[in-house]
Length: 299
Image 1: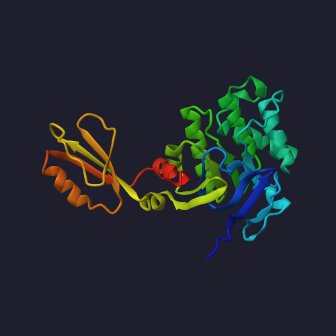
Image 2: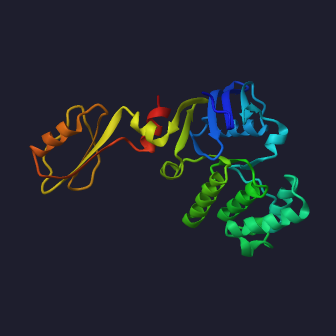
Image 3: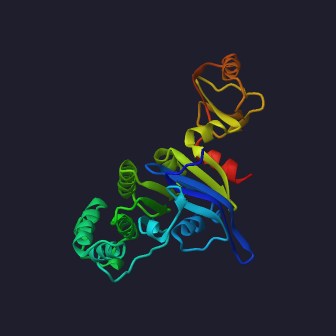
């Protein structure tokens, strides 16, 4: 049954001259859910986000919010953090956040209070009177997050939000995203840091060449991979053993690693390995999100 509660993008198509940027993008971001929107450079992620925001007119497809076509009023309740800098360099931090809050419809007093609140939340409480141009790249990214959240949006769209952030800022942003989901907002973000995506997002949509290739939970996408990763830790010397149909992978001393078909019988493989050497520990797991991503986008 189609989702009706939150953002639903169906069959988006967009051509720029001879370039067909989107050839059928589907994306769902229910309320109260964090969705990773993944794809290589040029896959169509930013164009899709701009289409949702109404910044780019689509050639075909639909964008709905809570089951109805998205309106300009709906878009007033979106928070957007673009990949490129979208700040006024000669404005002060507090002034900038408050100004963007007023543009989003807040009155002066509310915008001023929210600006102070969000500056503190993103770790810039003591930088309110600094010019944007005086901030580091990472701190400018923090300002952009505060700008995206100052009006408490129902839908938060973050385009490569972790780019240029140090580990402390990454932790702060991750916490803020989780807080927005907890209050019922829909949150979608793109990122090339797939290990971070796997830790943060339960659901992901993977796109390539303007088409949605896969969507679902990280667990299910990994489970549906056609391969498994076999790792054996040996007690003592490493024997000259490899599984049938297995592809060896680089491994540290005392360890053997292989990629094997998903329908391989782990018990049979372990017994075969144990017949040739002293097995200390074994893992037989589906590939990580990074491997699943590479397999999907290279089809």
